[in-house]
Amino acid sequence: MWVSKRAGAVPGSVFALMDGAKGRARAAGLEVIDLSIGSSDLPPADSVLEELREATRDPGTYRYPLFSDTAPLRRAAAAYLARRFGVSVNADAEVLPLIGAQEGLAHLLLAVTDPGDTLLLPDPCYPPYLGAAAIAGLNVVTLPLRADRGFLPDLEELPAGLRPRVLLLNYPNNPTSAVADAAFFRRVAAWCQERGTLLVHDHPYAELTFGAYRAPSALEAGVQGVVELHSLSKTHHMGGFRVGFAAGDAQAIGALARVKGATDFHAYLGIQRAAAHALGLPDEVGRAGAAVFETRRDALVPALQALGWGVTQPQASMYAWARVPGVSDSVGFAVRAAELTGVAVSPGAAFGRGGEGFVRFALVQPPEVLREAARRLGSVPV
Ligand SMILES: Cc1ncc(COP(=O)(O)O)c(C=O)c1O
Image 1 (cartoon, rainbow, N blue to C red):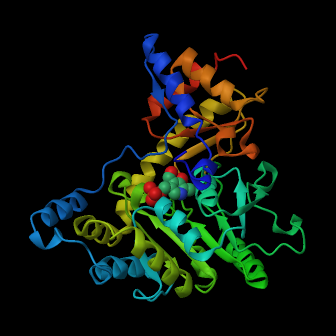
Image 2 (cartoon, rainbow, N blue to C red):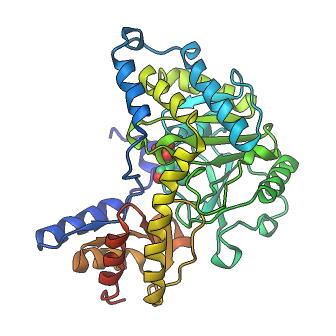
């Protein structure tokens, strides 16, 4: 009786199923290697933690933070975009702090769409996108991401008359680890502009890049008609702090501020200070964290390839996305793998129909544990 149509429309998660399988593995005495959750296991930089500690000693941080209080974080975000991507945004009108990119996206969709509007969404995708779309009452049109196209969408294959209200993309991509270049974003932004579509780019893996590769910002294609969501969860290992920012089109950011004004009072000022400090740290700090994930990639990917699994070398993100030969029920396979070997991975189907046949590894364990995980998975019947 007390469940709205909106709440009822939010899809359930197969992660509860994986939790059950992990529990059964533990009960059977197996040592569980959990690679199913994409939460960084690295700590934030010491100076970030010190900034937060300092803030808790300042009584000026204990009250409700107002919009004007967010100015230092907004300025730090604008300075980061300028330094890192050469993107110029107005810190007062084109930047807004978020309580994480996930919160930002759900509220942004409420801010820029009306029920029944069309949202163009990649398949596979980060599962909360579907929940956010359901809450906003959107008509979801899926955009297939296929391995043979490097998991980049082909906008030309969409019906010519399609005029979506929003196109949501995410590169470096979860779950596929695929990356996109600046020319791709220019093409996509032009496509959106022609159709009156807002391009929303979810960019939480912006700094988790490997080797010489650096991820571009969608805002390099222009700020009008584009909103980018940044997060400190992965890039600065601050997932539990719940902090990020949105930047881009002033109208969309203004609408988001209105919606958020009715739902939250911004993050705790101490967290805002810690985040502003983190965004101003030298790039080498972020590179050091990324290098840890790169070493893990270098341990896991060849071990999976040796099993005959289809996996390409990720250039970014904290995941490996692998096609498991002979598997057409990835949920069944992942549950079986957890129960028989204690290795928990995310079934590809959890990310949409386009993920079927794949599993996603989160690179959240040291190299030797990842190699051990691959060794155990080799024994799972398909
Ligand atoms: C694509 C994508 N967007 C957003 C998030 C969540 O970011 P935040 O912690 O800032 O809410 C994640 C976390 O895994 C993600 O993979």
